[in-house]
Length: 190
Image (cartoon, rainbow, N blue to C red; front, top):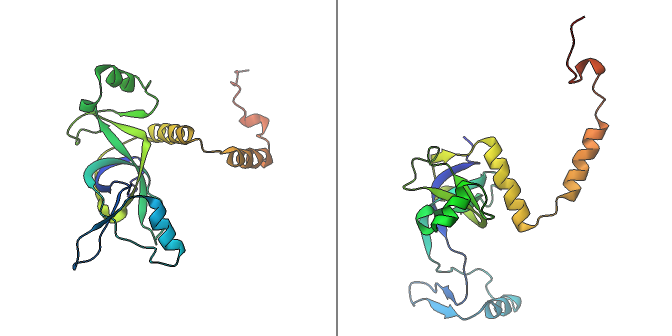
């Protein structure tokens, strides 16, 4: 079953950020690296490029944007959710009226398995490994809602889709013309 458009619980790590806390093995405690420059310099000198970072994480519901994944990586793209309890009354109203620029309302009647009303955070993309996602969904967007979330995500992040649109227009232009008998004009009785 596809998870695209579904809200499911997942283990979501935070992105590593400075100061970086590195796991050093069982013989010694973790150590801190104050900035990315030192890690990058060490990697450029031929040092170990893979580290085990100690980062916080949460078990939280996410909206799965796409369940397409590379078998080697096994990661889904998802959006974090914002609980309504964290929003002001004005923000809640804007979200419910679909007027908030970065929050997409999740209708409570469709997502009743969540502990409270939520909105998908358009700017809060996370990668979640497929083994870290509960396959039991808490609700699902319909196709139109998922398309709207995708559009808002693309606009927010400023992706340039001109070539994709141009390619699609060329494909449509290459299709044979619709015969007159199949046109959408209403047929009048004779």
